[in-house]
Length: 114
Image 1 (cartoon, rainbow, N blue to C red):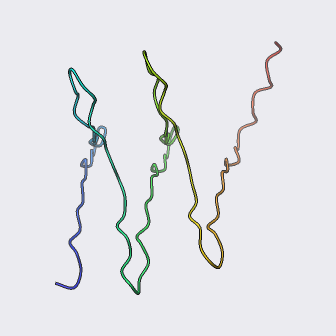
Image 2 (spheres, rainbow, N blue to C red; image 1 turned 120 degrees about the vertical axis):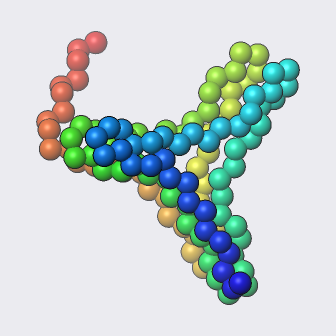
């Protein structure tokens, strides 16, 4: 085969109720560390580009769309985990990094006095 296989994990549709959920988590280490979870694309071949990695939520017709949260949790006896976002480098030009928030059609509440 010239192409690798594809894997799809689908929580299923709900026609009159919620759609199915998907949870991916590492195992608990009862007396030791928990396992790691890694999501990545593979390196490109000699004449290609590496695949994209996208995390996103769907749109909502009524109510709010889902949140995307990336972070580390606290530690009871050592230092908390770090969170990092990085952009790769290149000989000709580095990648771009942007953070944006969308406009709202509803006016924001005024800041409460302190």
